[in-house]
Length: 366
Length: 131
Image (cartoon, rainbow over all chains, first blue to last red):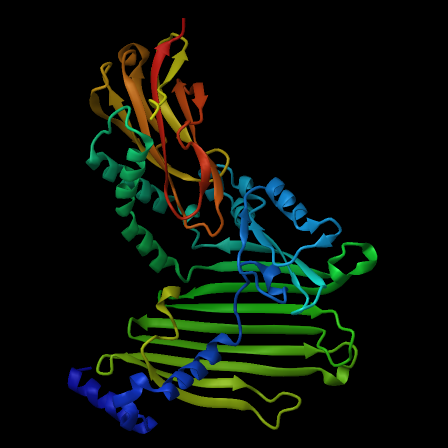
């Protein structure tokens, strides 16, 4: 499209949307921010992946700091430090790759999918107060198993060979170091040589952002009354199961199919005891100026103590973003929401548009 | 600052060419690096070879030809942007006719953890005939 034609198209579109009168001040408009947030909610209401650390999803409060432990022995000793005499401490979180040594050498890793899955598996655990001001403590443990990851750079022999060859060439260009040079000299030389690898790393990231992935997650939590770890003080709290399959759609898109289910212990009839979700999301980035996202999810809400409260609804969302150079911003269009729930009078679906500086469908995903 | 350690590797006399191998047997890590050679007075003689994941062995010649030479492996463990730190251990082997005559973990950062930064390691050595 010619620049004149594009300008005309932009003007026509904005006029149709009724936005043209506001374009002079759109950058400062709080209303535009609210509209952008409304569009953002359409694509952030449902998470179509497996959480990095499933255990933390079951904690009432997300941990602010997570300790990474390396070996199962470290994991065990870290967990024992959580126990203060007879009580559990709160606000602790850790994650670990317990099967990291099953990866063995790079060649063995690259030729075995199960070694890759085991190596990438992440174990997590955390504690939190059951609610603000409560002395009851929730302990959650979980596991995340990336069964297939075609975007795993470690598994790509050609990529690793390319990195190493580039690194060696960069070192060779620096010339031989003195035999007795201090180690700091080598740290500085390594930093210089590593710069040569960045474009290759970036290229790999860009070409593998939508690679085939299959992940599973599992977590469960217990509640300890007053934090006391004793059989008669502990009861089951919640459990969750996640699964996600992401497949590439040509070079510019990704289709994700995800499911999750979470059980919650309930002492009352009004509380939800299970929520399940099955959905799919398609994201397309045909160019640097255009992006598109469409998603659909079915949600089941069950109440085992009073099945009359059970509910089912659909969530759908479609967002289109176009970078308009004339406005130096993004024009976003969104449609979606949730279909009618048990207590609603009708579907809550709406059409929104906004002009904003920061895109919603971030290209960092690419 | 203490003088860096230069390992003396003693190997039994015998014919055949020697080579230096790099490996990471415990966890899957990509290793890269250059093997530098130095004369007896420690003057650099240049590159003896380079290591990549596919070519992890560098031939250095027969024992008689390297008796008074020094070597230095300037290596690195290449990172893979791991979300959690991963332990690594680099092993250097001196090999003759497919048999490892000596294996050692480089004392200068040959073990550690890696996450999102390349981790350099160094191994300085000379090879002598065992008496």
